[in-house]
Image (cartoon, rainbow, N blue to C red; front, side):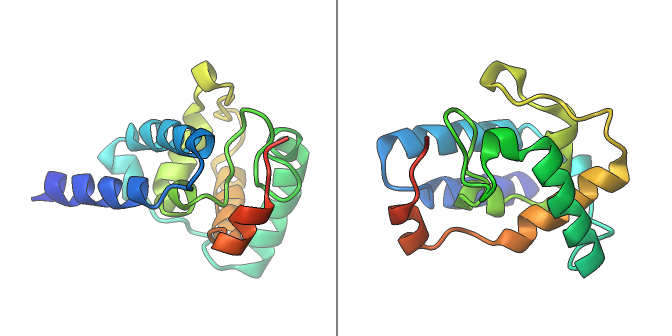
Length: 144
């Protein structure tokens, strides 16, 4: 039953991917990477979720460590994923924290395992605070 629920959720998220073929390809790669998160990691809750101080700290950390590739607006540059995409925003906080810790070197995402858990959770709180891109946002954003 749990596998069916997970498979259904992954299917729903993949169907919500953006319209262009490049963005769909990027979304599928991100989805595949996030889907590798173990169930134990997937189910972890962010202890800082919704806390304004943690979101502000996460934004600062994002600017220091992530914006070079993902852009100041988190929409991605070049090969870096759009972090406002439905596949990212639809992931659980636990999946995102696991992905930050593990990375995906084959796709250019470094592992941030050396960053303390608290800081990774703050980044996740910030990313989740961005919410998904609207269709208007998606139409106006371009990868550089």
